Every structure is written in structure tokens, then in C-alpha cells.
Length: 148
Image 1 (cartoon, rainbow, N blue to C red):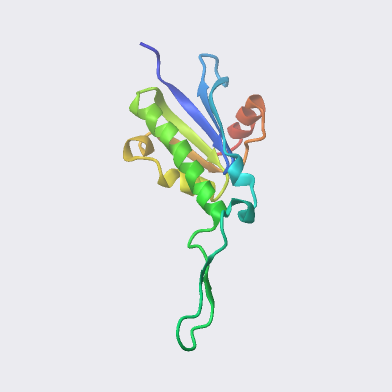
Image 2: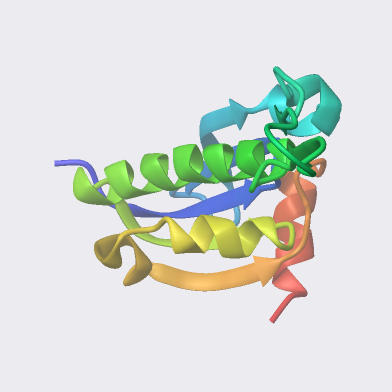
């Protein structure tokens, strides 16, 4: 049986890397690299149609437009946070993860945490609100050593 190791998840609304500790202290190997290019798109590029319109019916109604309840970009961020959370939930359910540190940009960190199931939340060792997705693995480990 394989030894369960701690995971390190580094994410923002457009990219998430899932890394696993190796036997060598401070070294990680990449398990997943999830990319969500829609999160980088402008809201108008994501909207497939104009906001709803109601033409005047009867006396004095005129025209009215209704804005979507959720901004298209926020919807994509939520969709990606669910995808990342599902990968974590699956890893915990398959007994592959001993515990994990979550490093994510704010407010993506909160979105991601809200989609973790109860079993996965129990294994959360540390959460850091910071976007470190552009760092190499070695720079990431050095940077996190300095963060309490």
C-alpha cells in the first residue's frame, strides 16, 4: 500500500496545481495542473446573450432590462472552484491524501473552501490567502516556509 502524503494546493481563479510531498524533505511532485481559461476572459466575452428585455405591454410599462443575477466571470470562478474542490474531495475519498495546505488568491480561497466536503475540510492543515501560482515548485516551498 502506498504511503499517504501531504498535498500542497496552489490556486487562483484560472489555475490550480496539486502537488504531493515526496520522501525528500521540501520536495514535491505535481499530481494535477488544472487550467480554466474562461476565468481570464472578460465578462462580455462570456455572456452568450444580452440581458433579458421586456417590451412594453399595455399602458406605461415601457422597456426594462434585467441584469443577470451573477456576473459571468464570478460564475466561471465558482465553476472552477467546484472543479478544484472536487479533485481534492476525490483524493481524500480515495485515501490518497494525509492532509493538505491550501494557498489561493482571495476571494478564490473562500470559494474553494466552501465547496470542500466535511471529510476534506478535516484534513486542511493550513490556508494561506496569496496568489503564488506563478512560482516554481522550489520558490514556492521557500516562500511558504516564511509564511506562518
